[in-house]
Length: 493
Image (tube, rainbow, N blue to C red; front, side, top):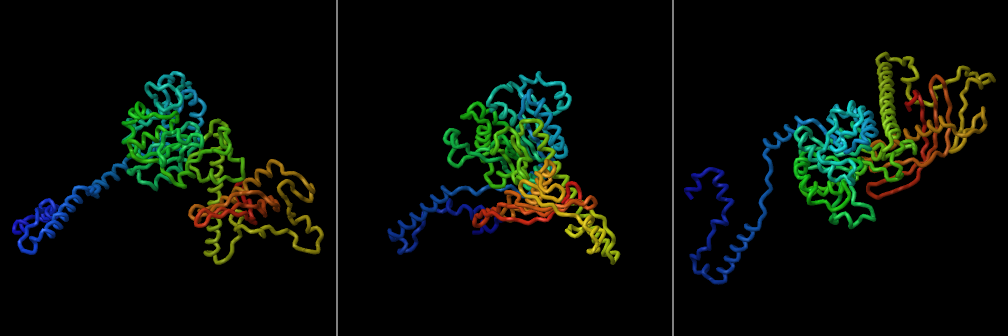
């Protein structure tokens, strides 16, 4: 007892942690304790405690706060993301240049993009590709672009990314050369996650009905589909990168490149593709029309295109450029709407400071169906009819007006109507994920519009929508909505 008191607190803790090892067979000092039955019970207790001690799992080891802070600090010194695009010498001339001219040019603000091609085909690069992408082409040794499926190219690309950039970036992405990526949305999404953790993100798949049982996957295993892109943290890349050649030699069971890459990640990093409703919406694979590209104008408003961060496939250059222009136009609308809201707020504050209502221009006025007033307010004057704007009626097929009586929808009106419906549905779906419901467009029932050259156009639209609730009790029901829309500028509502 004296020895224990002289020791430090740590030594006392060590003694307390090892009471069973120092415990010997109990001594029987009294006659009562020498009873054989009691003796047998004590021995059983002792053996049980020893068994529990031997079979107990060790406590998990956690990093100290100093180690955790050093890891976070080291992660902050890295650049944000490196995107590796798997391509070929032939496709760089078409898809590679188009990718670089659209979303690829925005990546320099947060990271770097490289195009990985086979070394055997590097001599086929055109002078234009060498001039534009000379600092962004990586040649993979002993890789042939013509070899398909490209398991070797994909796995060696992961090794090359780890070897060349493993210590320089927080996130790494494997992408096809026909994918479209919203760089700003991608950054905002990944900023919410800790890059020091083990993360594997993408469109989760288990194969179609014809492939079930042929992909050599366990019952609960999945894989990240390669088309929309696969994102991994640097912690995952450090475990998979040096072992990618081992997977190539010993663990190729199917002809699907994305399945084998996910299998290699599962073997050495121990994680599956993140299975969640959110990631399924962020990484969009266009299944509805197998035409090789996505046409954003095929429907009034597709929620999937708005929610998505990556969109696949876009194999045609013209369609890739059209998709890029669609999203750029959407950004312009958002900026112009913010400008209109700020103008109105400035005008409201100016009225308060002046203690009277000032004369506003049409851009700083609040939306109102009564903003237009005829010059002649005399109801008895027959000439007043010429100064009153008349409303034109339209339905799904025709426009009815006093000038033409009935006419079909021309191309301009179809585009305007398409734009209006898109804006309405987008407005109704703000924070749809948090609200647990979303609204999709069905059709236009009918509506009215009038045009004033000074103030813009006014619309009253009656549309049919499909209301979907995916929280609590699932519900789908058709609803009709009356919307009042105003064009104060070309793309402002």
